[in-house]
Each structure stands twice: as structure tokens, then as C-alpha cells.
Image 1: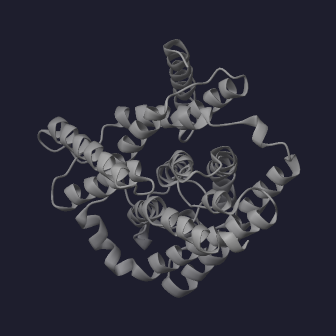
Image 2: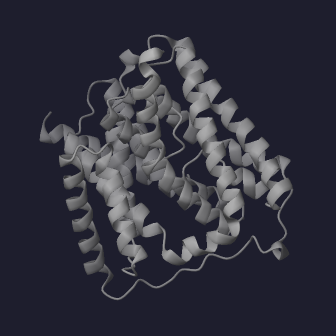
Length: 350
């Protein structure tokens, strides 16, 4: 691995991401970086060091921690029943897909469980690396899941669910709050605390410490009133960095059994769609959540991508944003630990 190959990988990934971003593709920066790095990886040209993974995870964890505040979680007190249903449905889907993929012969048990974690493509793939799972196979399933979540799922929701009237109180306009005073210094301090937390977590051998520890440390700062506005250009840089690293993990030699790959993708997408319809309908009947909003809460895409999808549909819901932040937190900090513990507990019997 040379400096030239690393710079070439980052440069091409950033250019591809910028091109898709300019074309208004949801999560275009990340998707472009993954695509460019994947192509380079197939031809043996893509290369990034392991430190890129840790840096991307630290930035991502800090970003997630900055996204949720004490006031946000207070608002969820009146929305606890749908939150419980969403948590239960995501966990059920995680385990169902994991077992089905394993019995379909897609990969080892831990890798199959990680394939089904309801998080973002870069976060989950980087967690797979930390866990020693097959990152290439995790990447393939999550990439297809992301594409369907951003390009197919919104069309299905828009076509087969009724529009939500503005007087229901679920729609609202997005309010841009000014950055707090001294935001640059606050951000630098948060990143420093995140880096220290990640270092300590890795020293203590905490699974996925590079993203979990920064997430928790930044959220604690934010919860205590140390608010931080995360700049969009830094978030995009982290998307390029993590996307490029994830793309470099793609190993074509892992996909010799094409039928197993196709069956894994089909199983994942069918289960996710059935889950969104059933639990979306259940939340509408039991909790009064409109079907369209409920299905968007359970979309296959990640939380940040979900915000873009909802905007494309002309639908902005504070509840939807809060649920996606909550979903992102549990998918990053809780579900991976459940998968790891479950694989250690019963993996030897399968």
C-alpha cells in the first residue's frame, strides 16, 4: 500500500460522491465513495489503512451523538408504545434474517446476524470488521438494502399508502437552529473526547469501541447541555472516508456461490418489506400512527438516508426524525452486542 494508492482511492471516491451529491442522489456522497472504491477493489487498486476505519467511526459516532438532545428524548415519552413496537420488530427482523441467511448457506452465523442489523451501510460494515465477521458479504447485503431503501421503498410507500394531511400534526417544517456560540471549539473538544473514549474502549477490548464509545461520550455531553452543531462538510468528509474504506473491503473471491448471494439479498428484502407493512399497519391500528409514517419508520435505509427520503416525498415529521435517531442509536450500540452474544451462545450448536 503506497501513499499514491491511498490518495487515488480517496480522490476518486470523493469525486464520485460529489458527482452523485450534485445529482441530488440521497446519501450520494457515501454511495459514490462505496461504488468508486468497490470498482478499484475489484481491480486490485483500492487501498486504505485500518486507521481510516477508526477515524471514520470516531467522526460518525460524534455525529450520531450530536443528533439527539435531552429535549428530543423527552418528546418520545408520549410516543413510547410505537417505539416499543419498532424496537421489537427490528430485533425480530434482525434475528429472523440472520437465521434464514445462515440456513440458506450464505455465511457463518455471526456474519449472517450482522447482515441483518438495521443500521447504516458504513457503520454496520465497519462493525463487522471489528467483530471479525465477513465484511464483504455484510457489505453486499447492506448495499442492496440501501439501494432498495432509497430508490424502491419510497415508491412503494408513496403509491400504496394514503397521503398525510397537514392538520394531523405529523407534518411540520424543518427549523434550522443557529449554531451555538463557540461551536468550533465545542466540536474540537467533542472530537477529542470521542477519540480518547475510542482509544480507551479499544484498550479495554470493547466490541465496536471506535464508534460506540464516541457515540456515548458525545451523547452524554449533549445530554448535559453541551450542545454542538455538526458541520455538514465534515459529515460529508466522514461519509467519503467510511464509504471508501467500506468499498475497499469488497472481495470478489467471497462471492463464488452466486445463488447464495442472490438468495440472501432476496430473503433480506422480502422480510424487510413484510415487516414494514405488518408493523406499520399494527401501529396504525393500535397507536394511531398513519401507515405511511409507520412504514417510513421501518424503511430498510439508515436514519440519515431516511431524512432525505422523507424530504423527497414532501413529508417532514419530527416524530419520524426522533424515531430514526433512536433507531440509529440502538442499531449501533445495542443490536451488534446482542448479535455477538447470541453467536457466542448458540453459534457452536449450529
